[in-house]
Length: 314
Image (cartoon, rainbow, N blue to C red; front, top):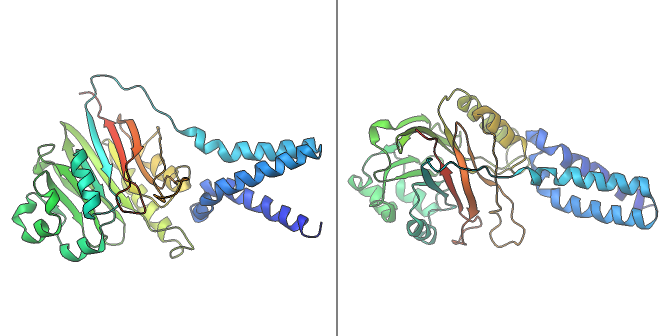
């Protein structure tokens, strides 16, 4: 009994923290404890019902329903047949195995929010827009697999990020970089894709506190949200958010860009039967996610994220 009461109090405090975590950026780390707390809550509810404590058992069951609520928020929308579609892959690394998979799939958009160390070293410091990567030997040597099929390249080498557009899908004159500032952990650019003016935003936010410095992730999110709020065109936002779908991070960014339809799938850790959906795709401005799935294991701790996105009809 002496041990039981403190454990019960600890469970209640932890459950309340997980329940409130989506509303506070600084509590984002607690999101990862949601499933253990749900399982513990179910066990407590079963025990209380077995003890015929109907009222407390009912409250424990209500807590479980509140905790699983965010998982019920995903869904899809019917897509009109006249909407063109593009394929996007968020690749977890630039290792050969990952690049071979991407080339096999040949997406229209390839986001790599976290280059491998070898690629970072080989690229060095580069300007952002490269209309013809073959013309720059350092680029061709660093990522030879992508030189033929993808151009232009948008690189943010100071944060180890790259955005690659399939050759012929856009023209270089339509590309305008909005965000490539050091330390923002975001790369944002305007492009014209299939005759549709779009903004592409790729992110790789730092981990939440205490896994990284206090307030770093919050500052990155707030800066990007302020930018997305001012963009009038459709937006595709994707990458590694280091946060779960129902967290305040995604809510803040979705509200800023006007995204109203969310889907998600687990991508991390790759070898676990239970995977967290910290890699995400969000769209706005008439765009619709037709399908969203995780790709196969490609040698990284993350799985690739594969999305088919319908563009607004002209």
